[in-house]
Length: 411
Image 1 (cartoon, rainbow, N blue to C red):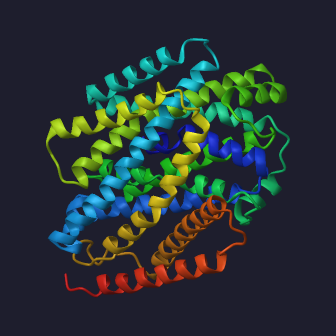
Image 2 (image 1 turned 90 degrees about the vertical axis):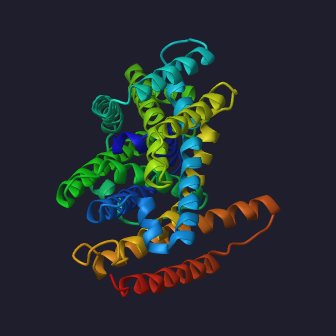
């Protein structure tokens, strides 16, 4: 379910765009994002497993009643808005995948996809939903692996590009998008919610395997995009695939895109409902059900509005990338609070260094994207990278100081 949650149409669009525009240069961003996602998923789930508290209850315990409730709403609502924003791209992506195979009305397909997802969510059968997600992820993996492996790739070059950071001019938004489509904020809460009751060892294995599968599929998608040129729509992308690998390439793209969209159409509202209960602390089943209904209907409204899917999906990736610094800071502080997580499970110095590196990276990426947008919007020139680095360092120092205070509190 975790893999299905962040392998959505945004993954397909962003990774294919990265591969088609910059070849293998941004493959390192997938590696970084995958490692970062494993670490943050582990931290989120560790808080729940080690303390027995929901993330919302942990906020109140860590920050006090007043500040904790404010943190609940700031984090919870911002991530839930991200769920709603993602849902628009999820449904649009699923419909786009179907449209590559059948020439049915977009309105009809949108209604069918939304109704099917709603029926599955209404059933509330967690085991059945999990099995369906596994099947859809398998379809995605096979489809995009076939497209990627149809190329004549140099394994040494792929390995090199996977670890050497390079940010070509004009790739900043795609770097942010690759991070945002992999380290999905609502997915972090989903991992915590479904890990309750597990042992730490079992939780770590489950999180690591799930996220690694997602990262591998994202890599396949980027490699598939490496062989084509720029595209502006999914039909154009399907046409390029047909030219490069044959008609089966367009069919594989359609299957993978639909599987990505439909699986995420289910998991995004499901994650929002989990946030309602575990972060906002609302156990009312009616309100929890209302949450996923609102998220699903938001996606449906976008689906029938005629909005072109690719710009919407890319914008959503960037938006969620900007939410990441807030969520990462929260996780670092709470997992280091010795009153919540027992000292045996509080992360050590090496683990915290990795967490701070992830925090610095997501802040810098977010600031750089805002800077580029402001320059373009106001017609300015130049870059403020040095300032962005300085602000990111200061933010890291502030979080490090607060982390020290958390660790030295008396349990």
